Structure formats: structure tokens, C-alpha cells
Length: 311
Ligand SMILES: NC(=O)c1ccc[n+]([C@@H]2O[C@H](COP(=O)([O-])OP(=O)(O)OC[C@H]3O[C@@H](n4cnc5c(N)ncnc54)[C@H](OP(=O)(O)O)[C@@H]3O)[C@@H](O)[C@H]2O)c1
Image 1 (cartoon, rainbow, N blue to C red):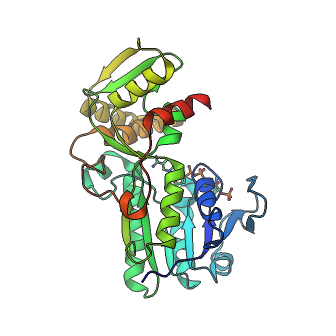
Image 2 (tube, helix red, strand yellow):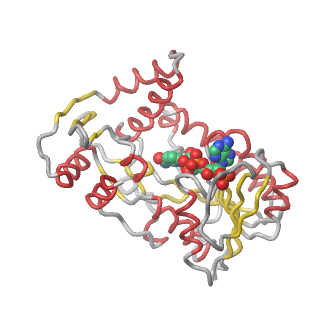
């Protein structure tokens, strides 16, 4: 028999992902009692009646222990810089506060695959975050974790043309033959997964990495969806080889002194690691996907493209 984790503290309830997690928890007020923990300097606005606890910007351990105390679960959805600096201390604070379940700030792809970590440095950083969490769970009885692997954030990727398809110029960069499939998930589905883990599946998800996916898609699928959504079938296609693209992006990332260029190279590695065959980026084909267990619906790609075009 599962016992729901009802009192939830959410750190990073603003930003890209946080509002969808907050929305999913707040839409079930008979189950969840949510407190958002936000920095004093934050300009973030939350829906009326949201319980917000302000803490110092560098999340001091003593403040965080008292902020977490009395909560069943802590969900971390942190900005990358904060993750890098504060994640381990936040894990420790949740343990000291007597929290039962932590959802760490991972929200990534196949960080469990060594070759993926070798290609995409952020996957290696996330793996380190999760290794610390795993180690602490072995040491600390009564404390547990569930991490959520999402693949790419599909809303963000569509809105920023991250996939390399640009609806304003009708130009697409197609890597390989365009058929390699990868998983991508909407923010709303991630919120639903978090709520389902805490409400209905705490036992099945204890000390596990769960995988969710709204779409298992290829660049060709995306191109077809864009053509249909824009009504323009005549797109200019540029092509590239995935392995050559990875080597070039690694070289730029390692050698460039231009911060923006380095960030673009890192972003491209994040896309190409999903397009390289054999690294499990398509969660469904890899047999790891947990949508059914969590009751998280699949998405409609064309509708998602239409939504992004309206933004
Ligand atoms: N799989 C993917 O495609 C993908 C894409 C993007 C992000 N992610 C992951 O998703 C998680 C959340 O990312 P996100 O893009 O939603 O994060 P974000 O918008 O950059 O930041 C999330 C929250 O972190 C808090 N924060 C703490 N220190 C901060 C600082 N120094 N600067 C700015 N904000 C700070 C803020 O909350 P307050 O203002 O309320 O304090 C902020 O709203 C991360 O683990 C990230 O790596 C995954």
C-alpha cells in the first residue's frame, strides 16, 4: 500500500520547469500542501495563495534544514549555476530535516550511458549529482530519492529553435538521414509525473530513475510537423554528419574563448547526443519508459509545434 508524500517543498518553483511542477501539485489541493522556496533576490511571481518561503540566495544549510523540516518531499528544479554550487548541500539539508523523498535537479536524458556522458559534458555533471544522491541514500535510512529523466524539454526546444528547424526562414538542419529518434517531454507532463510519483507511486519509484517521454521523435518527424503547421512545404534543408558534428562541437567547446560560442557548442552536443544511434535516447525503443505506470499521457507533436508557433 502506497502512502502519499503530501507535504512538498519545491525549490525553484519559477523558471522554465518549476511553474509546471507547481501547477500540477497545486491542482490537487486535497492531496498536496506545497511550499515554494524562493531566494530573497528573486523577482519570481507565483499564483495567488501560493505559500512562499524566502531564503538567502546561497541556500545556507541551517536555513534550508528549517525550511525543509516538516515536509515529506523536497523537489529541486534549480538553475544550472545553483545546481553546480548548492545541490549536494540541499541534499544533505533534506536528510537532516527528516524529509522522506527527494526529487533531485536532474531532469535530463540518458546520463546512465557512459558514451553519452563522454559526448555531452552536462550529462556527466548530472551523473555526478545523481551519484551523490545514490550514495547518501545508502548511508541514510528513511531518506530516499526519485530522479526523473525527461529527455529534451520539448516546449523550450521548440520555442528556441533548439532542434535546428527555423520556421521564420523555413530552414532546417537535418543531421544524418533525419530518422534517429529521441525522447522529448513537455513541462506539463513533467509536472504530472512528479505529482504521480509523490501521490500514487512512492513505493515503486523509491531510489529509482524514472523515464517519461511525451514524444519519441526524429528530425524528419519535426520537419513534417512544421511543414503541416506552417502550411509551407518548401523548406531549405542543410545536412550534417552526426559524428563529424560531435567532433567539431567538442573542439569548439574545448578551444573557444567566446562564451556564447562555447554555450552554442554545448547545446549542439546536447542535441547530437540524442541523434547518435545506440545511446538509448529514444526511451520507448530502449524499453525504459514509465509513462504508463505514472499515467502520463503522450503528446501530439503537431499540436505542440502549433502551440510553440503562437508564442
Ligand atoms: N532536459 C532538458 O532539455 C532541460 C532543459 C532545460 C533545463 N533542464 C534542467 O531542468 C532543471 C530546471 O531548469 P530551468 O531551466 O527551469 O532552471 P532556471 O529557469 O534557470 O532556474 C530555476 C530556478 O532556480 C532558482 N535559482 C537558484 N539560484 C539561481 C540563480 N543563481 N540564478 C537564477 N535562478 C536561480 C530560481 O528560483 P527562484 O527565483 O524562485 O529562487 C529559478 O527560477 C535543471 O536541472 C536543468 O538542468 C533540462
